[in-house]
Image: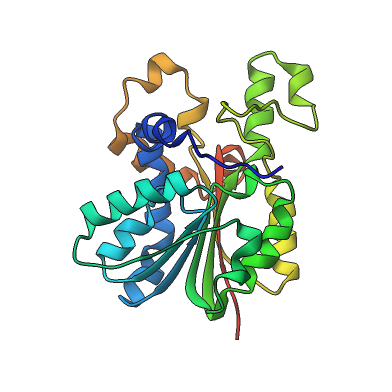
Amino acid sequence: MDRNFDGLSQRFNSQIYGTLKGQLRLKMLDFDLEDILAFSSKHKVLDVGGGMGQYSSALLADGHQVTITDISQEMLDEAKLIFHEIAPDRQAKFICTALQDLSQHLNDQYSLVLNHAVLEWLEQPLNAIDTLYEFIEDNGYLSLMFYNRHAIVWRNLMNGSWQRAHNEFFHHDKNHLMPQNPLDPQSVLQHATALGLELISWRGIRCVHDHMPKFMRDKKTLDEFVEVESQIGLQAPYRDLGRYVHMLFRKPE
């Protein structure tokens, strides 16, 4: 069953968005998207499963047109507050719907479609890429970030949880923030390219941070992590151990 985060917005805010690791994730997205965002100040952006809008709210403030969707009305209510705070003079469109039902609410195409940390919460994550594809205009971009299966397997191995590392399914419950369906990057790449999407960049996010002992990690600053992660996250094999993978695709004409 696909995951809805009604009732968990404050946990997301405190445990993810309000932490160094959450800020680091946003910084890495900035690196990958800065060129296409700088090329035009008038991107038409669709943020699918955008949650509280931490990323797309900044795009709205920079002058881009933003439509944000999420299955959780609670998340969207929080997003409205954040958008108003960051871009009080700008208007965004908010739609409460599941990813699979987007076509019932939208018939436009967009120059930039964002789908960040959503696929891993879906029962059929690869099928969602087919849906997203339909909303990308020719020469438009798909920014796809997802939870990396390799990273959680490696973490379980390093923690001595060897049986768990080889389980096909990962433990989760309604109050847990562990994704139910982490993805193999190669399967995502193969599915996206089979649709005709062209890979522009592939980054591992938190390749160093999440594998560093806590006592050492606590001594490092955000700027220090940004410096090392911005470089190492683009290099195989290190990128394959990032907690998240960010792939940027272009839809050819």
